[in-house]
Image (tube, rainbow, N blue to C red; front, side, top):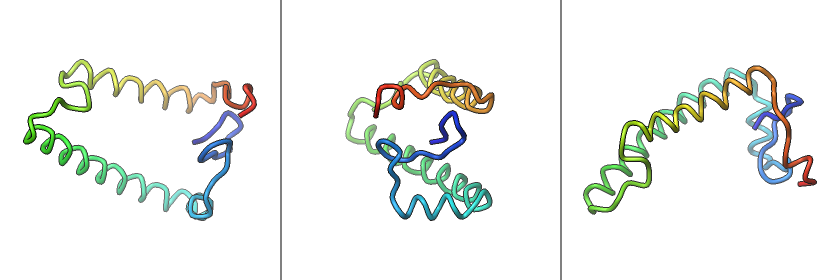
Length: 97
């Protein structure tokens, strides 16, 4: 996660694994390729999960209606917008975590 100072913080209290540190040191080209892979993987997992839950006749673990899905998309768009504007307050840091 990118905090308000432009530093990447992964894990609890800013601690990161060596694998994450190596990945972030690799630079934006790897990050962009990984983002595409993550999006495709997330789509595949979502389709598989939705199909499995429907097959087993279980309630979906997500909003089953379009307005719920759009609300989740809105949360993401708001997050990205504020992050790009550089606004924000590190609440966990202020609380001492």
